Length: 449
Image 1 (cartoon, one colour):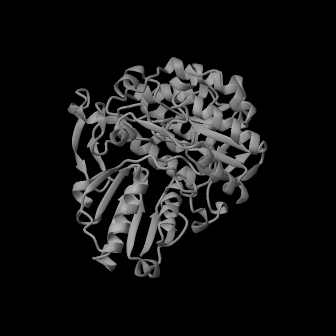
Image 2 (cartoon, one colour):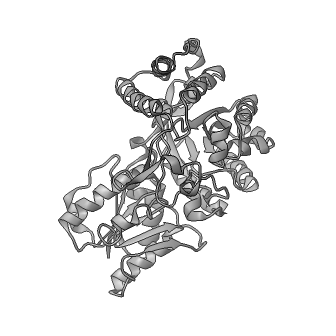
Image 3 (tube, one colour):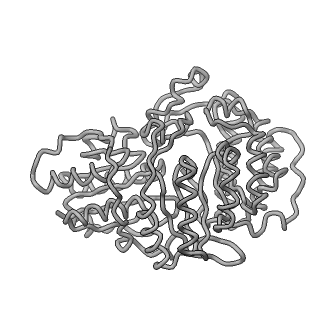
């Protein structure tokens, strides 16, 4: 059986969620090829070679791109079995299952994906088009990174005037939190499981051998199990003392676990990604984020006390956002010296409401909710204040143009600030000294969901 695994987007990293199932399928005796369309073309010969196509969809952007891949595959070979697997696989199932997808697998997808290919190879019934939530806690296989393009093709770490190769791993699956706007609890329901430490170390072994000098722990929340995270960080540092890393965790975890940051700093933690989202506490409460704006300030202070930079992600635009909220967010960024820590696209992010979103039942959302957009994989909504929607569209166009022109984070921030000042009639933020935004460690791929 010949299986083609297609990854469309994984935050600019070499796609772990293609390499892991590829290894499991190869271990099961199948011929496997991988194509990452973020850096490669999907050639007709690859589709002609395949007896099954599996599309990795760990995030919203990946799913939208995978729909185009599946449409292309089905046009070329209507009877070729296609599977979507990953966090976003069940999204828009009424538009995909039976038309573009013969199987949809969410959750811990590897065992269910292998079982589906086993059934195809044996000519057994596969159960027909359906959505499967994968279970099972088997030790993950060593990801088949040899089937993917080299690390040079992916995001680099920019630090100290140079760029370094980056590897991407995950130390946990799922998340124990149920933030209402997040897709993870829709699939995992507040559950998570740690990946065996030796399995993570073995993968980092091969990433270092491939030239990685920095590792991203891309878990939805690296501190879901702080003991597990601490033990892993210590083991990684003992094995590769020269390696640096970054991780993602919630604001309330940063504040609640001050004991981890000295160890993380000593082990080479350069920055921490954290979903600040907004500075409006009422909106944070609607999202069930579990933190306040004051706690975000404390998180910044705590990280920087140990030489670790925060890299906030933001969601400035929700149905409840006002123009003043957007102004307050920019003021917060400037006041806390975060201009060099924020990818400019973050100033444009609009709330996504995919099928199953826990926010859909929130009574505060109903007055603004519109129909489902199957192409964009989200329910439409309109802001309570129409000028907010107009500002979001203006900022999205502005940031896209400035990014394409190669503008710096500071230059783009100043342009965004000017646009917000014009919309609100308020004064602009004080202009920042260039030195306050240069040299902050970052990955060269802007963050998207």
